[in-house]
Image (cartoon, rainbow, N blue to C red; front, side, top):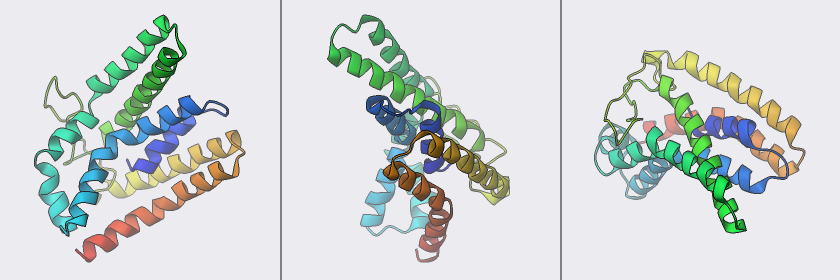
Length: 202
């Protein structure tokens, strides 16, 4: 799934008004699994590397495959979540309470990201159970590849984005939240358009 969908899903599932720490943890956990991809893309594009080479060659090389495996690891984020829960039982200071809430929220949000990614990665499947195993689930569905029903998955993903956006707009009344949700919705058109344009221009 696209990053904005993960952010909207985690926001709908875990955020609430008046809970900035919980909300920050949820949003960070939603984007963290995709962070290595954006870092790689930024570095490579800054160096003038063509999009086709980035996705067809460099993405599959080290260290980017290591970073991708680590940032999409169910065992790692499950450990973060469990550590957060354990700290909550023994939190005797504000610092420990802060840390426990943040780790639990981040881990749970990242696990939600991975759960929605698992069934929609075909040829580009992640090693979701690294470092225990390098096994990949090559799904028959893809969130982007038309050869694996990507057109239908994108449509379904867009409907999910609209549904959770309505939930967020009803939950939060602040103008900046509504603007952020509006931008996330607009990105369903802008992000694919950007990648089509960047691939056509190298």
